[in-house]
Amino acid sequence: MITVYGLKNCDTCRKARKWLDTEGLEHQFKDVRADALSAETIAGWISAVGWEILLNRRGTTWRQLDDADKHAVDTDKAQALMVKHPALIKRPVFEVSGKVLIGFKEDVQANLKE
Image (cartoon, rainbow, N blue to C red; front, side, top):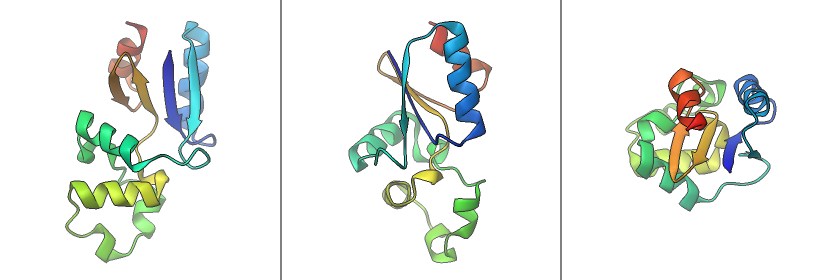
């Protein structure tokens, strides 16, 4: 079973879910805002892929943060920011067979089919 974390209104998340359906891959979707992620879940993702990959610095949520919040980000600060602002998590996040995959590019799609 593949667990997909994202935002229900995110275009990339919708595209990923549609692709999973088309490929016949069983999955469940969890909205990172509505389903309130725990700090432990985010810490696990950071441990698996690194906070630099997980933290979305291109979105509006990042741009709207105070400069103080954006300055000197480290693992702990990144985790706290993502807990407080789940939209800062790059999407989608896939949990499958003990792996954590971020985004929806061809390499991720290939890993999801394994």
